[in-house]
Length: 237
Image 1 (cartoon, rainbow, N blue to C red):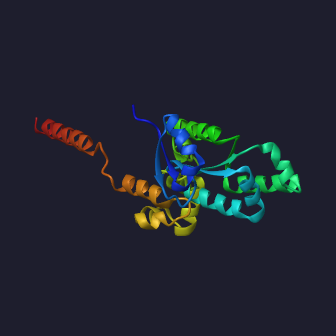
Image 2: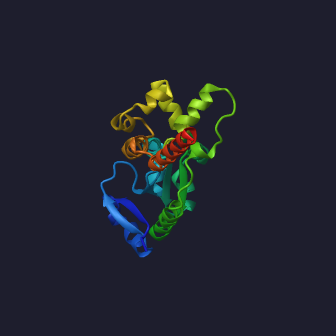
Image 3: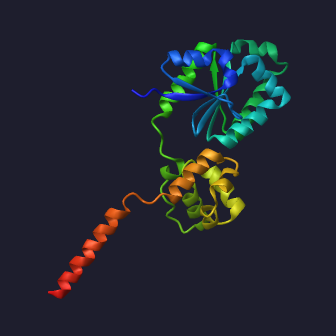
């Protein structure tokens, strides 16, 4: 059986979470991550914060910067807040402004928050993300039916958002920068990687899908050739 796997930042070794993940039958690979602490797959990553660091990051602005980086690199960014949430009221001067900031950052960056009490629960939460993400969902662009209207802008948006890992938000960004779907499709892998919300991994996937020869082309070509030969034989008769 192939174990589910996750990439953990080297600096997370000391937290004990990677060790606990291994005991939960999740294979852990280490890397020096620039964004996030745990990468579940090319679309999902999580930043782990202690409750104290999380509260501090709200007030010094780090949370907004980190949320922006996560959202630019991964379509489904998570922040796991580890610790006793009942202590928050004693850490902040104004709960209304604190939760207002949380609401603002989560809505602005489509950020998902998970609360855990300790390292054991954090490992359980990450393991659950890893296992549930293995059943890969249909890309957002393919969940929508093709626009039936004659609205060209909607048709263009649908077309570009059907690329691997590209949702509506990123498609709008790509079209806004390059103008037309044809120009987007003509971008090199390195140019795609520079677009916020795409990054190197998604760019590689997009390039592969655009450049890889269609698997059924030989069968289709053979069928068409056979049909042509049959029509020619019929004419000869």
